[in-house]
Amino acid sequence: MMFLTILRDWYKEIIIDKSRFICTLRKVSDEESAQAFIKEMKKEYWDATHNCSAYIVGEAAEYQRSSDDGEPSGTAGLPMLEVLRKNNLHNVAVVVTRYFGGIKLGAGGLIRAYAGCTAETVKEAGLAKRVLFGY
Image 1 (cartoon, rainbow, N blue to C red):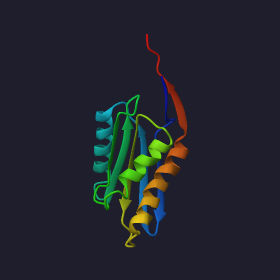
Image 2 (cartoon, rainbow, N blue to C red):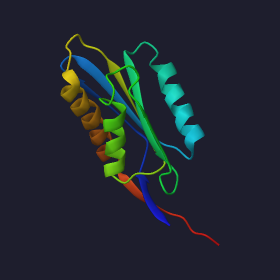
Image 3 (cartoon, rainbow, N blue to C red):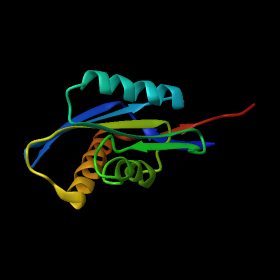
Image 4 (cartoon, rainbow, N blue to C red):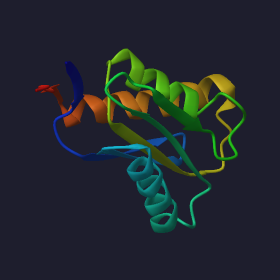
């Protein structure tokens, strides 16, 4: 069986309308390691306004979760998860940390910001094929 994952863990920071978005992308092996990564990022960026997350884990992508972490429902975690799905990624987790800059982006602006930041980070991290052999 073959699936795609990221070539390397990656980090990217962008500023949109004075809000600072920090996207951290990491390879994970299971749901427990994905949740541990999210917890680690929340601890590291404890003072952030939001730490939104998404992950896809499993050979058949059987575990898919996302969190808006206080952003309006469906404006952060789900768009991030959709980027992972569109790239057909497995065993990958992403956390986008936001420091609010004083300008409200609106629902559409939030979706574009979170999805765009995730997509740029995935592109820079690179994609790798992972082949599993059974005996």
